[in-house]
Length: 508
Image 1: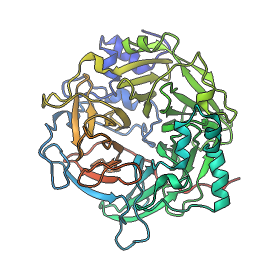
Image 2: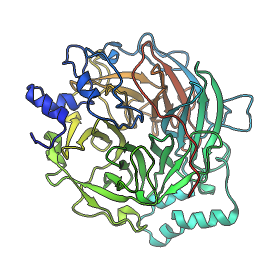
Image 3: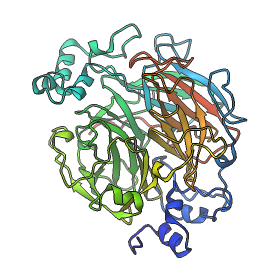
Image 4: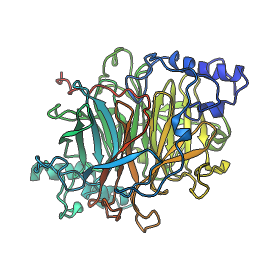
């Protein structure tokens, strides 16, 4: 499809006779490809790595170091398999204090989505969600029992919780998570400029099943609850950064990742729970989201993606999209799905970069690209095309269970697996994948862990990931009893530009 309204980068690609699908495979041009740096730098701003797109200089002969990092080696002392020259360390473990001198704060269970923020002293903050399951989560598994659903709904349990008194911390290791509601939340790890862990603290409590989210250009963390009637929230990554706020215009649904397009005043967000999940955005007017500022979150319009040509057509190439205004009256979205909107079952990861929104669907292991300027969608990774897991090692299984995404300013895409082989994978522009790491554990266990929370430090030399439901030796655990955060140091750096951590502003 060629359109005068499509993204200018795609016009250039097609004029040069180059395959657009190869280009869209996360905008990365590895060794031997055309020099596209100037196109990327000239394409405007806006990214899920806020602060990106500012015309930062780069080498027009850019070659990704990921393409030449080699196969995974034997497990290291932490049980992590990495390419040669990489190293790992454990920075947080469930129910243990990350800072021994601060024994009153222990790390949460079930770490999931995460974001990165730089700090004024040259350090950084890793902000991590807890997808701890609790009484509130029951609503997600009883949709066909009306009375029970109402009794276990978020609203009913919030009223009960208010009567019992606030639960200010996560449940301890020896508690049964289903006894009490709202045992999720968000915690933070703060590092100094040399990478030393110097502080750890909670930044959001009294929420449930906090799956993923997205960093904002104004330095806060948007995160959501993965239950049928869940809310989205905003919190500061800073200690004492203000009271978290509920965001009303993101729909009652099972929230996953969020990706911010500040220039177009849109925030894209995903949903994963029913098998009939939709892909969403919340859009704001210029009055409600002034340029260079934060939106008025009391405003905004919730919309749902519609692909009239169908998802199968989008797997073959670009097709047009449209956005349908959602029924956003407080009713959980699964009860008011509109037939004209398109099912993207198990859509989880989402990232905005240079006018494109990328998102993953775990049900079919596809990765999609939306051209926000041209108004089209297409699959850029489809396992039906027959990819292998690694061109460096034929024994590596194909990428599976595509989940959270993270990208660099140069478009390098990290994809972590839920239900795959406990890996973080790199997707290369020709459709090949290569493993970046494999965490300890048995992926064939009855209830294996999953890899979550990918985020790069501001210097681009460290990648943080989590094993959600496991102990440090890889032993899988039930929900509420596991969780390990790993820091991976690379022998090279990538270009990233996370936002500066900020407190929440005073409410008007």
